[in-house]
Amino acid sequence: MDLKHQKNNILNSFIDETIEKGYWENFNDIHIDDIDEEYSNKTSWVEGGLKCLNDTKGYLEKEYKDFTSFLIIPLESYVTKVGVNFKDEETLIRELSYTPPSLYICEKGWDNLKQTLDYGILLQNDIIKFKDFIFYHVEYKIDGDSEFRRSIIVCY
Image (cartoon, rainbow, N blue to C red; front, top):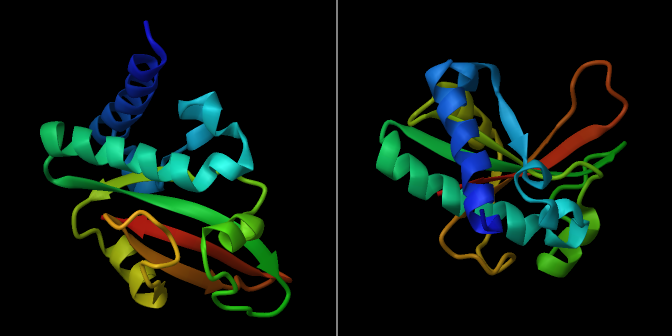
């Protein structure tokens, strides 16, 4: 079995199980480095995550039309709110956290995703070269945490 076929099998199995068992309601996710070890290096996370999101989109459009997927790219946390402190892909890579991006599946129009995106800041598409996606920057602090958590949520 070639690597592309193996990657698609891992991704498709994740999607099938997540939807068929209702795991999506509990924010079931898969890290991109679990899909393909090629994405274990931090410099490949943004492009690799977007490629995986695109593959997920294609499978969902064929098999599960009522579902969509999104990618969460964790960023470094800070004690103070810093907002969008990157201007291009290169500076974005420096802001990546230690955890690889994760793919999530949900029903189209899912309230939890809509509420999160409403809280986020829509990013200009000139920051990241992939134009087929919509990027949001989210920054929040949970009671009891010492730092603001930050991430980019990518949708299509």
